[in-house]
Length: 134
Image (cartoon, rainbow, N blue to C red; front, side):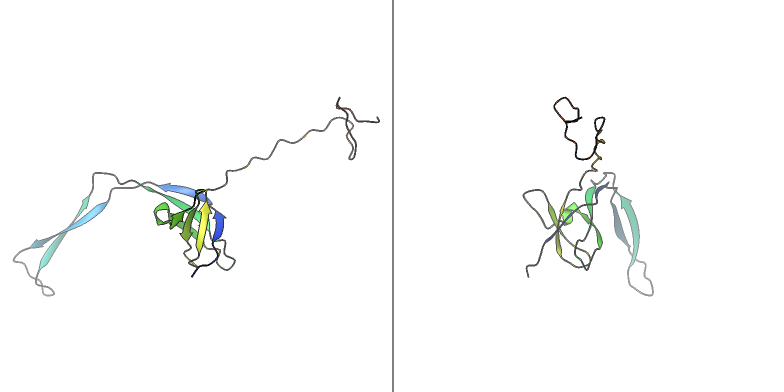
């Protein structure tokens, strides 16, 4: 089923650093039995000494009119990438495909324009910066 692909801007991109992965090792104790099972195990939790690399997460809001759900998806969960750099994800709520592009940088407001002396709306100015006809 092909549907409409929505497009939106990411609210932010968050980098979550990795960590030290853990692993649980079970060792069997021979000769010991319990009432529930025939074998007894000891569990040991081992922590790795090598830190795992983190992942970037894209935070966006679904643009579908009936969904508007906030999503936080890992870059590894992207279905595809377009030629212009947009990533496509599945929404958590409505399962629609959404193309997300990088967040727009904060645009600063332009500096206010100062008008020359004697400015009135509808006045024309000459090349010397003075109003014409004054």
